[in-house]
Image (cartoon, rainbow, N blue to C red; front, side, top):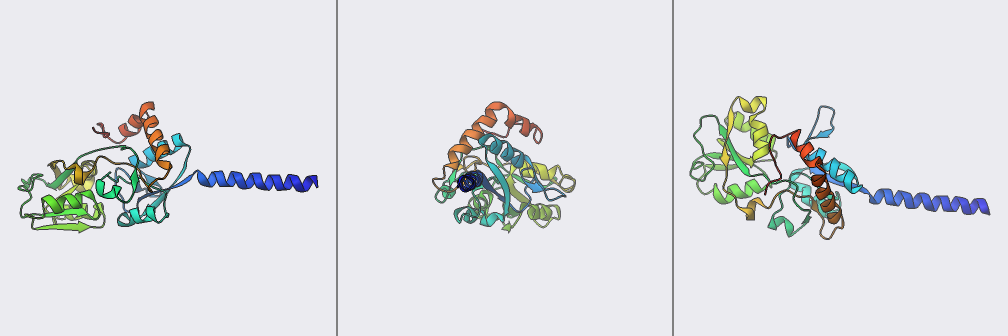
Length: 258
């Protein structure tokens, strides 16, 4: 009888421990498409980049077992709301439109949108400077929304790409005149081997918080208590100096923003 009770207690304890472990596992969605220097798979298929390092630091602080879960960018919010992932950490800007569907943590970086073009093109990051030009943007991004409002009325075309990498390749090949994207992503491109040979940043666009948002945050389901855990962990990682340590490995300047 004693052995049976002991076995039962062990089974119950094991079950509780497994339940706790499952509760601590968080499936973190990142765009399956490479988005350097934030998220991209290396030659071995491991996900690397500033956002991956930051995610690891935040999850360790929050005592969460975070598992990188690649999802196509244009389906990443549905994947969250349909419980296929538990959080989004994929350079997703906090916008009023997205907040109708999901919650966000506090921001963890905020950088301007910029325009890249061929070297010596004379293009500027304004509606006038892009009039009559073909402009490339990634699908389902704040930059696509911005281009639709400010550049489409006078541009020759706003060309939509599934990935930023495809857009970069077309600028390098001369199939588009300019790109609109996050300044850090374009900076990484124009400093790469293919980008440095052809292209340059020509400036940041005028800010519009209603479209470009209030910075990048962790996307979460409405009312999810994970929001408090992420907020506390983000604050702790910044306060400890770990945020600056991670950032200095990728950038020579502050990316947290105002």
